[in-house]
Image: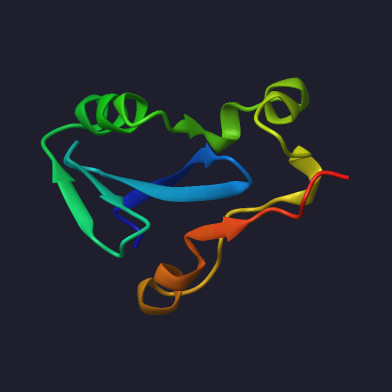
Length: 100
């Protein structure tokens, strides 16, 4: 794991958060671990980011409180899922509590 850095991305579908993990390797290639448990390979970090943005994902680290509220959640109440890839798959989709 020392040869890469990770970024979390998310998309919202109604009251559901869908996570994706971008892994950028030292060699410049990238992989996206998606909510289906697939690992998608890309030739570059930029290509992987473009694919995520095309799918309407946003970088978790780039969100501010107002953007999060526009998407229907409080930034302080969410965090990227944790665990190894096997356990992570089941945590990549999170239901948000109903607005109330």
